[in-house]
Image (tube, rainbow, N blue to C red; front, side):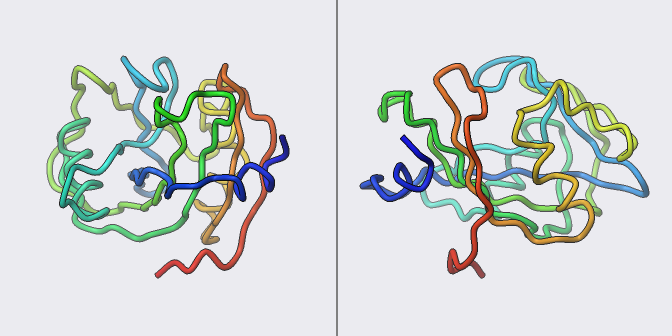
Length: 171
């Protein structure tokens, strides 16, 4: 199934999630996922919303839980749809992720049971150890472009297809 066909076939809204990209002069803080979905990959910090929680509240809570910092600035830089048509819907892998750049925070990044943070020079981002979609959108976001995109993966989390979107009605 093609990406555009699958997107049109969805009958319920995508699960809402967050992703924070912590940045400082010429560097990005990524965290190695130690367990669960995405284990063994470098990524930003974030996750699912809890009941009655706003997307920004979730982004702040996830950063606190995963690496011990409290974001003070959240600049929305992307909306990404991650789609897994070969995975049963009850697994709830399909998601819409709001991505934020964070350049001010309280606390020092620390390792948790779930994530091990590490600073990387932006010119040396370890794309080979990240989700395969990241190389397509992350450099654009770090370069100042707002991104709206959809990425379709197979059951083994291999990127099959992607498209950049417009007009998702974002604020």
